Image (cartoon, rainbow, N blue to C red):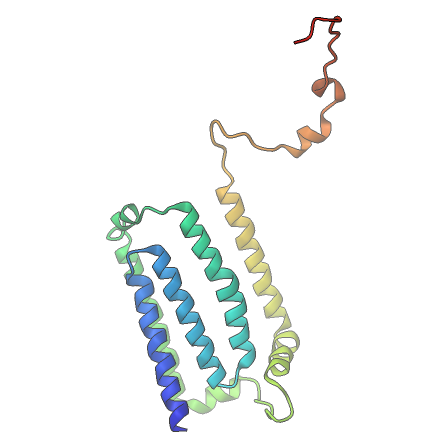
Amino acid sequence: MVIQALVFYLFAAVVVASAVMVISARNPVHSVLFLILAFFNAAGLFLLMGAEFLAMILVVVYVGAVAVLFLFVVMMLDVNVAQLRQGFLQYLPIGALVGLILLVELVMVLGAWVLAPGTVEGSGMPIPDPSQVTNTEALGRVIYDHYIYLFQAAGLILLIAMIGAIVLTLRQREGVRRQSISKQVARQRAEGVELKDVPSGGGV
């Protein structure tokens, strides 16, 4: 138990330190690298809790896809950090308000958990016996059986958000040629092919 506690405090300290460095690093590439470090240590915390499936998903999805995608996007876009920091004070009140709301919600949740622990425990699903049901099977039963409609609704919201992001970034620019599928399909042979009768010896 002592070794497990030491490992827990080690992972937790690295996660907190990495999270602080993500928002305080001046270089965006360094921020993404610290984010990957935080994901790995959070996966270690999940392993200590016995949630090996969540640890695997955190490493495979977030580290293997999202964080690497962020890294490539940041490196390819060549973000001007100085220009981004110029509008920091402008959005500081809104960010502080959102952070205050989240802090109040967390305090309310933790307060309800401390004052009435039976209510919180009774609202959740019963925990199965780990010797009979694996962690992955238990998660599958909860997500795809009891909360299937909420799971599908979450997927629909993500789909709408993805379509909205594509629509917002799809704008017309001068000097940029865009592909028109309808015009390509409706194009006739006479519009794209022109026959020239070159006399003998008149070619280049």
